[in-house]
Image 1 (cartoon, rainbow, N blue to C red):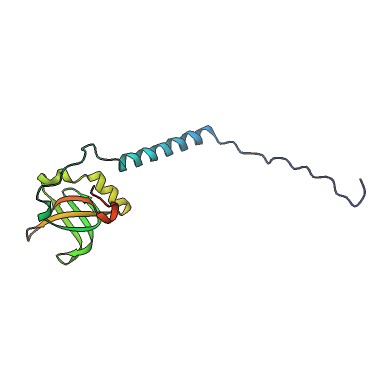
Image 2 (cartoon, rainbow, N blue to C red):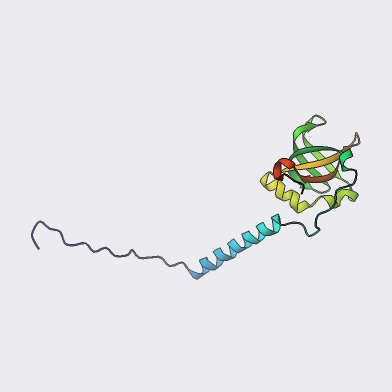
Amino acid sequence: MPPNESPPVTLADPPRRQWSRTIVVVATAGVTALIGVGVWLFSPSELGELEPPPDLASYAYVDGVVSEVAMPSITLEAFEPVSGEDSVTFEVRDADARYFDVIHLRAHSSIGLPTRVYYEDDGERIWAVYKEDAPANSGGEG
């Protein structure tokens, strides 16, 4: 080799670290569990679609984002004030509870989807009568 030349450099693949079998199994189980929870949380209720009360048009309604679901009460951060308040806590009567899918409401709460609540104010309490997805949310009822 001439004196001014350096020895040739051979490039080889760098050593690869093998993933341990335990890490692969745990990661696969974790991803599968997350997908399962997501499907369960956002899938339609087993109850199917309930028809709204026949006199729904006679009730006032407000659109907003559900901030807390603790049946028999629901707290909504209203887009417009109700009785002067932006944060409204509705009570749900036993007869109206079938219209309030807790899982669906919690899903709305967790990702901030707008919800429309039809209600009746008797002067002492504000009673939630029915809920649906707000039209600005989906363009339809839900």
